[in-house]
Length: 279
View 1 (spheres, helix red, strand yellow):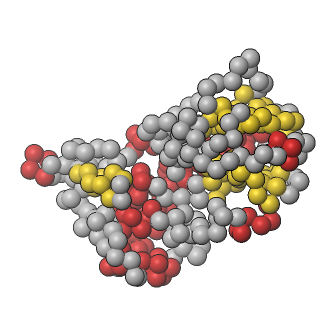
View 2 (cartoon, helix red, strand yellow):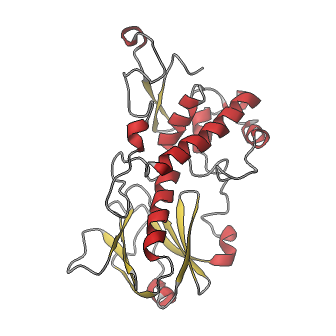
View 3 (spheres, rainbow, N blue to C red):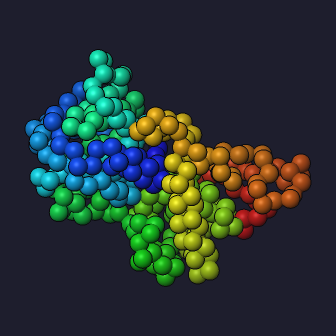
């Protein structure tokens, strides 16, 4: 699933290509995504101008000059590509196509777990997608005190709390493992015992790692591709994710004895960590 860096990369690429464009038409080939694409989707956006692209959590938002916002979520396999013109034939799983005077936007989603919805631009905080969203990683209100208060009564593992979008939004499975590695915190630690200094480290490395990942175009593990067709490159900088049995970059341990980086399952998701450095 595209996480915050991948969605930010998609948003930046789409913005560079079609921001300021006028929507000529839209075609919904398959409305049955995670939620139904609105039946009047094409009618409501036809003739509108794209005035801004932005991101909230793992959602890409396309603001239009008619007071509506197109809400995109990419689920497990959703991706966007942009063509200069309509090709003779669409690709398989091209479910939503938006034609503009600057290019054609294709939303492709093999698994159909993504979303393409509409919301009123000035009422998005009331939209079901955003009612319970936590703080953005760069929100100035994200302080150690905020994080400690959110974790105070949570006995679940700190890794699971980082995945909770009602606390900090945008962090997914890949980056939660990387953040905890850099912060030297064991992913199985109870959330409620995290100290103030550890909370500072979590916030610090959340911002550092997500920024590094955005600069690298995100991480391509399975399906993720940028709208220009290129992959992300941050997977080349992962310290622990998907590196079971290897030595982490900061360790000099004997992996024949330690076993190297370990993999466990938490909340149905894979977690990777260094048992030597993370406490």
